[in-house]
Image (spheres, rainbow, N blue to C red):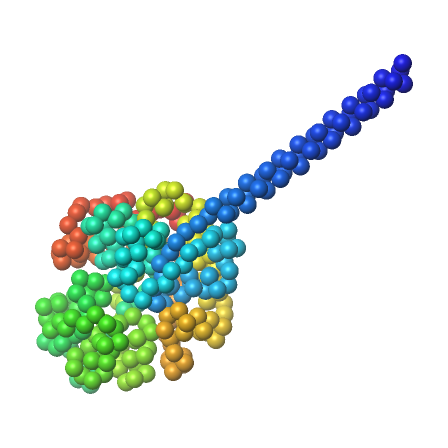
Length: 322
């Protein structure tokens, strides 16, 4: 009798142990599956431009940093702001490398997009005129750029520092950057506004830089994401920036030779300018100075690009501070 009870008790104990082990294994498997599903659910689409501020993004893609962060990123490259803006407006992008003036235009058109971080974009004023040694020397001369966009804003703020204004020069509306560089080389216009690599390309071909946005502390370029994306996919956006920061670290810890092929393939650098390349100082992602936003939006209002009231909270995300 006692022996039978002992056997029954032993069997029951073994069955209970197996059940507990099975439950534990099942719970662990469920947890691992949940983690994998969560990683798979991190998806974003982002529009990059052929500009130096997109370099950390391109590096992060090449080195697999987005995948390391569990992010499935649809990275789309655009040759022109017009094509990028069309993709944003039509819902094909969650975020993009853009600028403050473009952002004001988006919001004027009821596209609720917010600044998440500044980017490291630069604009330069370049000239081929021997008599032009400084910005003030452009008074009364022809300068090539595009109206109501970031390059014009940069030029306006740069001229302000010389006690001049856009009315002090003769504007020449030339949309294509390579054409503007050629016109400057051939002295058809006195100067133009360009980003890298066109600044360096121009210098290699005999032009000289009069001023640049970094030295003058005129910030225009940003990374922005749509408000609904920031609400619905905050972890995906954070993963994007974790990978971006790894891209920054890669640039800062590797010689130019290691990533110059990316500059050539994605941004349009050439072997001819390699020894002259001047890249910006890449830093970890951070939000832009609100004063820079105010100055840009004030100018946008003056130009009637943006006519609405706004607050910092309307246009700036605090995601990186969380």
